[in-house]
Length: 84
Image (cartoon, rainbow, N blue to C red; front, side, top):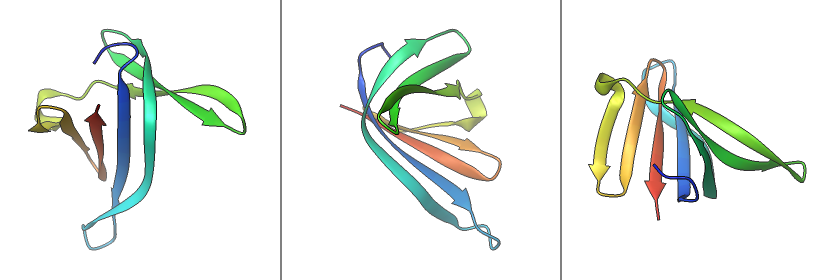
């Protein structure tokens, strides 16, 4: 994860039966901050640039999918990141 990288993300939450349901998809976001414990992606909300923060996952929460895609699995859901 490097500042300036382009990222697409999808957020999934588990429904009452435990199945993952996609909640949103945000495309062509930019990594704007990388810290030792978290990172931020740039988001435009109501025409203003905002930072959307995410903690680095624990080893048990990180699932690589391919060279440029990974899942962060957490209690109640999952975030999917695809880098391009």
